[in-house]
Structure formats: structure tokens, C-alpha cells
Image (tube, rainbow, N blue to C red; front, side, top):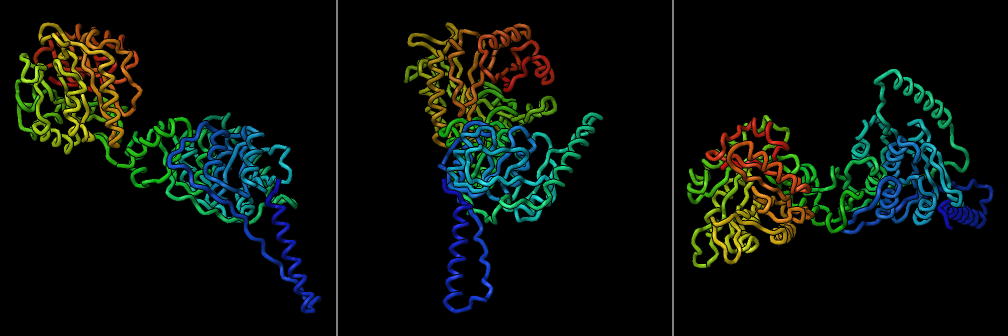
Length: 572
């Protein structure tokens, strides 16, 4: 195994031989030979794939990050698996050197990676230990004293930073390459026992600092180094979990920008969407299993890069938001409150309904409109489907006005003998708008020989899943934010086999909306029964009827009496 110290020594010997030969030729044997300055060691990075999710956590993830970002590293930083605090210090050193940082938890994998990197020196932090079979790799213990460590690295030490529990990864993200900013866990002195522990730790650190502030022994010094050229156009994503700290440090050491994405979905918050939109990265690397597979991260990142956000912020419908909606058709007042006034007044009325909820819940309250796009009809009509489809252009003024006002829109389908999928596709041009979702109303879904008002309609999970697949693909292909898909229900039979509805497509947020009307006791019974038959449904809606409920709940009662608290509240 060839190592950098051997090659450096050979270079030094060759320089000396050349100088000696020159002095012999010109007869200046007595002249003092100049001392050649050693060439600084320098690693090399490599560009990751366009989209890459690195698996695991801690040591496994640190190894994956090293393999992804570094082609060669003469110096590697090694943290102690048994000492979490050493990881912060190792991360600081990694950024200072522009070198990968690994963990000593798997000797065989560590030895293999050091060999691949052709490492010659390893800066060990804490009690980190190298595998015995590494031959001529030089282990250099990192001084516990900040000034001594800085001198060891040939840098000046910045002001030390105390890092609160849970803020370790964010602290590493904020470090600069080529600068030593010592990181250390924040002291915890909340009681006498903790104070004693802190005092003992301080004493131990002081003792260690005294011991390690001495000049390093021969063969235990790091070479002079230069930062490698950074990767370009690369954004690494981390959830901020402690197990991603070392991988995050390695990504930053390689020159990648890093964004913290809690939960692993870059669409989730305004901050993550803005980070990807501003970076417009050519390469996106997810650090850890939370980011899914490569394909999932690729389309989610592409969506986030658009920078388009939903009402209430971010690109996800839920969590963190609750919606208060008016239901009806803008075409006629006979079909609800949306047709009782002009679009501008409708927008204001929706805002008025939503406002009382803002003080009742911690989530962001988003005003919304549920617009009946296709209306069940007692007559077959020219197409024989017992459903009237309003032209998309007739609905567009209200849809666009809602978007401009920061309100969400759901298009409601009452298909008759048509199919939900066929009718959904009629409104593709409106569904291309980021703030527009879809609702399926099985009450008005007929079989081939059925008519309305004879019995309440229903839908199979298979029919719902046809819409799920189409709408999810539609959303992904256009890099659109997540869309809400509402399933209306007030009897169990209306959605047959609810557990078979596909909830796996994260392009969509599937919500079951309880539409029961009448006395509150009966409505609550329906609410509980639907929950029992849809245990996997995460998002739920509740409808307040102005005239049919006895009585209609106030906003305060809706929040306090409906359990669990609904995510989508409609007024009809």
C-alpha cells in the first residue's frame, strides 16, 4: 500500500540529490545548500451524481459521504464512536482541513476507505483509534486545547461556539472551509449533579490540554495542506438529525452547500423551498434514509426548485395547516354560498369565515373554496351521463381570484354515469394551477343503469385509485406542489374498502371529508364510525351546514367538540 509520507520522502530525497549534484558541478562544495519547502498536500473532490441518496446514519453515512465527495484525501479526520462530543470537534477540524471525517465504529470499512482515499495521515479526535493493519498511515492525536489544535492545523482558531442539544448539524452547516471554529456541546448546569459533572469534565479537559499542548513527537505532525478545489453546483440536504453530523461535515468540507430539511422532504417548508430555488443545484445529495430513494428525491427537489409555494407556505398541503372553506358553485346561488355574490365578495367572505379559527389552533389557517365543477343532474343530458360539466373558463375567474388572495381551491366532481377520472381530466388546465386540488363526491356516482335520488351513490377503491394515479403523475410531471384529494363520505358504504385507497403517492394529500348533516349527536356518531373504517387516513374534513344542522357549531365548538380536530372545515 503506497502512502503519501513515502512519496513525500522520496520527493525530498530527489530534491536533495539534484541540489547536491549542482553544487558539485560548480565547485561550490562548501556553500550551504538551500532547503526546499515541501509542497502542501492537497486532496481532490469528485462531483456526485445528479441525484443521490446516501443510506444509513453515523459511521455508515459518514463513509458513504466520503465515497461520494472525495476521490483522494491525504489527511482524514477520525471521530471517537464512544464520544459524541468528539464528533463536533471532528466536524470543526474537517471543515478547517477540507478533509473527510469518519467514525471508528467499523475497522474493516474504515481501513478500506482510508486505502481508497490513499490517506497518509489521520487526525484522531478524542480516543478515536485506527485499525492495526494500516501500515504506514500516521495517526496524529488532535490536541484538546483549541489554540494547540489550530497550531497543529497551521490555522488561527476562531471563537469557540457552544452548541445546544439538537443544534449540532446546523452548527456544522454554518462553518466555513479553511477556518477552525471550535464547536463544543453547551454546558448543562441545571442542578448540582450536572455542575459537578461539568467541573469534572472541565478539569479533565484542562489536563488533556496541558498534555496535548506540548509539541508533537517526531512522526506525529500533520503535513502542510491546501484546501481541495470545491465541488460545484452541489447541494446536500440533511434533516438535522445527529446521525447525519459527520456526513454533513464531509459534504461541507468538499465545498457543497447544505440545507437543513426537517423530515427529509424539500417541499415541506418555505425555508427548504427557498433554499433549493435559490441554489438551483445541478447535483442534489440526500444525507440519510429520510430522503427516500434517488427517484423520489429527484422529483421532490425539482418541485422545490420551482420556488412556487402553496397558500400558507411551503409545497405540502399538510401538516401545519388547517383549511376553512366555503362550498358551492359560482354559477348559481342554488348550489351554495359561492353563487350568492361576485368573486371579490366571495373571497372576502371566505376570509371572514377563516379568521375566527386563527386564534383557536396553532396551525396556519388557510381560507379555501370548494367549487362544484360538475353537478349531478336529474336528466341524462345530451351525453347521457346525468351530470352537467361547467366549462373550466366559467370557473377560472373565481379560481384565479382565490389564488391571488392566498386561498386554496378544490374542484368538486359529481360524475353521474361518467367516471371520476374522465371528469377530472376535463379540468386539467385548472389543475395545472398550484393552488387547485380535487374532490370526489361518491354520493352522486351512478352505475350504468342508476339514477340520482333513488339511492346514495358509492365508489370503489379501484375507481379512487385511478384518480390517485392520474393526479399524482400529473402533479409530478409538472413539478407542481402537493395537491389535496378530498373524498366525500357520510356513510361507510360510500367508499368501499377505504383501507385499499392508495395513500402512498406523496404528490397528493388524501383527505376523507365527513358530510353528515342534522343533529350533532348523529354527526358525531358518523365522524367516529368513519374514523373506525379508515384507520390509515391521516387527514379529515368536517362540514358545517347553515340550515340543515341543528344547531350548526360555532368555530369554538367545532374545534373543541369535534375530536380529532378536523384539518378541513367546510361551510355549506
